[in-house]
Length: 505
Image (tube, rainbow, N blue to C red; front, side):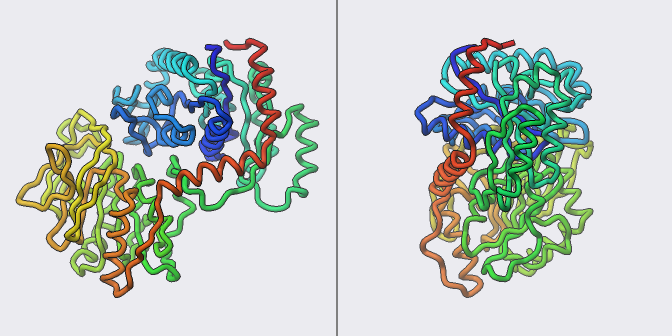
């Protein structure tokens, strides 16, 4: 496993910015002419990404592959955990469902299998790339889990990778978390750490300098960078913890009010990212009925557990509020994947795949009936979408374990090869589709938002953003930002020095 030069990023805890930093280094190494690939051995996320061959991996690794200018494969994330009930996850192996397992059973029964999968994927990537940028998970100092972990230091040893430890200064106590993490490592793992990066810095760097000097003297580890917080970065987030930063309060300075229902098992919420970039739209995430009010567009996003999240809508009173909006014709309702299933008349789960409830009434807004199946559909899709008397070529991806059929004559939304996807009402104010990424289609998104503007008596906006262009610009902006704030040449030097040691296992 000695061909590619690896570099691993680990964090003092979750949400320190590991995924974003890895994305930056994928872009940086690619810009510098290296054939670069991301890797995360085991990912836990409800936001996923579909590879060109219809397999499912963590969304962060798919985005990192885009930043590196390559197509994503399952070797970049051979194990994906998708929580679907309390203490239980669906185990996805090389892009396909393996089985549902509880955490204790997973640690007990899957460990050796997982290690072999990781070893094989690392070998494949090492043979085909020049740089491997590896992302850890959580913290390497979880001493209660380290005996059977397979995502942090065990992977670093397997890959022969030097490690950069990332701390999040925004959370406070960054020096304590960095020092504490280093001290809780085994000596051989501590030696593998070539330095640290302090992330999400705000303020005057001069006020931090004495702390940096103290840290380097105390630990013997260099500070390889202090990365200032970068606002409004148009790159997909993976962890739903990011949703905590979004408000539920209406911003009256924006002309269009967009409400996204944030149920407990929300998945692929990055579907709404392009709307964030629209100058006339304010996007709110809603968890309570009293937050909904009268938005112009209500989005029911994907769900990893449609039945349980539908029960949440009813228990919280959000379902009743949505029905009131529907009856008043005040809002456009748009369901994606699990949200699309909820808009139908009934959802059945005869094999108890998602829930112990074998059957539940849907919201009843569309003439649909969904059956949760054992087989998962994972596919890149494209078709011709018909709405508002116009046709739009659209593309997206599907991830669902349900099969949906109409219960009466209905109006299809998207014509694909040999089939129809989605459904809409006669007045086109209630719309549903299995297509994730539907709002990433610029012309369709433009027409949808302009139709909403016209119903409010507002002039349409002819020139809207190209989201794909924004993403490419964001990758370059991120790479430039990180280049300017880390000691890149020192990092490259330490990578080569580490490789010369031949310390691979």
